Length: 307
Image 1 (tube, one colour):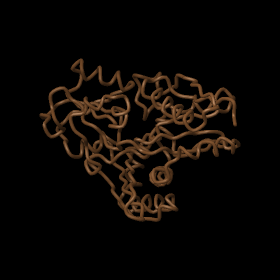
Image 2 (cartoon, helix red, strand yellow; image 1 turned 60 degrees about the vertical axis):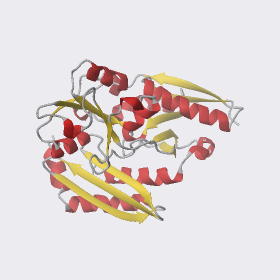
Image 3 (tube, one colour; image 1 turned 90 degrees about the horizontal axis):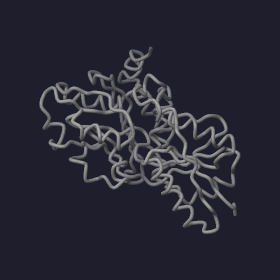
């Protein structure tokens, strides 16, 4: 058994909660292992005034953590799976995907119950082009503005009156004990989640077979299949974290049901597709749904977004 294990993590309160959660699970499984945290500042955390889409996407949140693994400063990294690029760098693997929290988006406001209760011109904040597109499609009279920063920063901006409402991942609010801030949830039909939303993943170097074996008891088979199907859609369509793409899979009996969409940021064009597949081959299902999206015009939508 390893004498110690270091977890690379971002410094945000939510990221630290996630790393502490994995730490507690590992310590319960392996009482003889000492687990510590290596908290790092990432480029994504530092670019508070820049659009993630323009700055390079959500991969900016994981590069520094992968560097710590490569340099031997940590053995594993804990990520929100929605922040992990569809294609990992050579030499790295996802050793375990844990059970999912609530995958839905959450509506947070001081005075309003849901998006439908907002008046024309009300300002809604979100950091996600995916959310922006789906909100704009349903509520074209709302004004949608970028919202950056960690979870506490975003809530503070709402509380200062900079926005009438903001839309966040329900999972983060739940994990930090802030579920009381949620006024309502957006169903997956209203706002299809991002690939991997609400799931935690543990990354390590591919050469560390010992670590992969050590981490396997943390893995959730159903969630692993769902997230891999979702990520396959993104990878097939270019693998970018910057496109307005939603993908959500769930176990349906003995099958895997996968829904996905690609949208223009203004919500005027949305390509949708869904299919059922074998949970033992989630990537194949993801590829079929990606092909179906192309048939619905996804390629044209993505081409229009290219610089």
